[in-house]
Image 1 (spheres, rainbow, N blue to C red):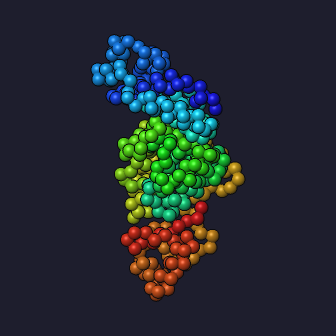
Image 2: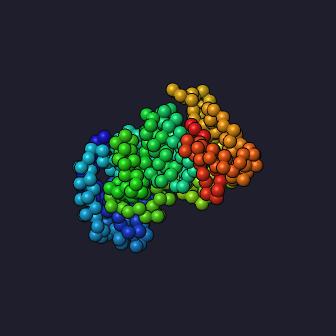
Image 3: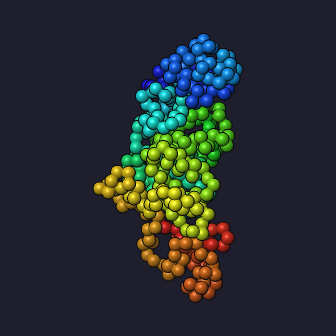
Length: 373
């Protein structure tokens, strides 16, 4: 798309000057744009014309060009020219995502790598813990795959765990995926996701509001979460602890009037407590991707080519030990009491099921059934 390449060097420098000026936050930048019409006009305005719009320190700081500005402009222009997939979008750009623009605090600039068409697609966020159970990863991947098959673009944050599984599931369908990151787009965090990030850039879209060279600072990730929620018509939380960034994303989605969905889990699993808290607060309990589609589009919606994956789908052939295990984590002693098997026989069968990917060993000597989507 040509929209990003239409920015001249002077225009880019003006946008970056506003954003790089100390003490000048996004709201102040938007006030200046509303008053003067363009970043160039805001930067060129007389100091007294800007002072009623800004705090005194910010007004004074804007009178001087930030020392890092020239280098940042040069790096950004070089990055834009290096690859046709590289883009910088401003608030007034026709390619700017409309659902994000409708939020209370849209980014002033967006950096993108990939196909900008995904910003106009219907999006659904899938988020969760960086330390999921195997079942949680399978659920995230399966839900994302089905929703992508139904034409939804999956939005997540490129983090370890649930985020990565959601991106993988999204890439397996025609809806693809958008990864919103908390660094500059010239960096990949975590580093082990470099191959995944490259695939997303090739088949979907990488997105950030942070300038090139920005490292992965802790305070950036809660800010990143507002973009994940803002791009999406709903947010699904797969697994999350009570204190987690995923719950921040869900809260932001609710504040923006978007739907919040949560997959329930065992009352004994710490990864389920955040989801249960959301459900108590009014999030919609979902057991299948079809539940989400029906809520967003109506009950007449049906999967285009396949059945919707369920978080609780039974194994094709039931195993007596799986029946004894049920759907909640259980200890070895509890399983032995339920099925009456000798310890060596029980351990051997548990190992077989674990190698088959049908049982997961959890911390604390617990075992949990893994459902196949």
